[in-house]
Length: 306
Image (cartoon, rainbow, N blue to C red; front, side, top):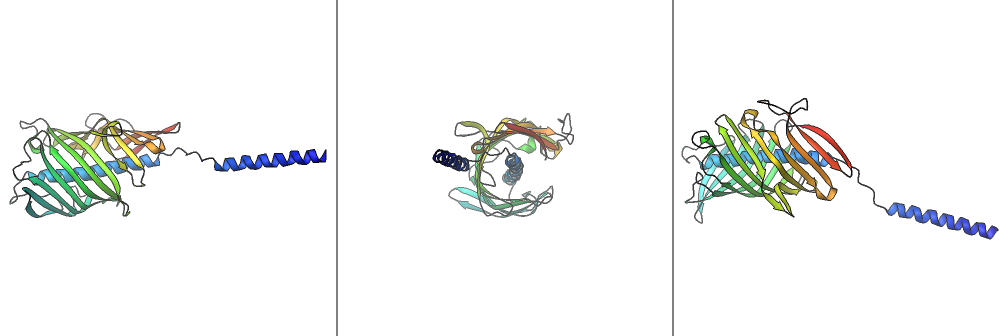
């Protein structure tokens, strides 16, 4: 009997030990967390705004004469060079933008073929970024951009003539960039495939933004790459995002879908909300956007200030 009891006790302790070891080896379940996609939505909005400002500067430089050039705020045209049948405009930033909410430094080079004219349909220029740094003067957040983009005037014409015989101006941006955030030395891949359709009249313009990128079977991609923490992400445009001049070019409507494939984290951003978390109407300007997120069967809704 004693021998039987000893054997039973031995089997019991062995079973407990094996069970405990197996439990230790089991991977821990990832707890639902929407903070990555919240940060990504803020970063994506900031980066797009910073880049849109550059492309607006490019159009400005290319539609005025060198002698009477109306330069962007806080920028200087160092020189205009010639290489391989192309003109190169060397633009340096070192100051505040016109709205005085961003401080910019760094260089961009604008390359256009000698016989091309930015006003003509399907004219394409190359834009190269060299340590283009933008600091938000309100919260001191900072991004640095390096890389290149091709910028195409799909429709021809210029935005300044909208309402004067021109109803729309369409631009396309195809960019392959590296971004660093807030002084971090790690560069993150950031690809941008963006279509912009401008309409309206002077002083009351608007632009509708769509994505035209394709990657791994996904379409309508506006951007994709790695976020500030090195996680892979995708941003798809489910409904055109509309920005209005009367609202300081803040996004007034539209829907974007943010995905972290490896974390099974998905969020939908809907633009056009006010401080009461209600949809804006009429001429009202937005102050927030809505973020609906889901991960591992859990979900939530957050309203984030623009």
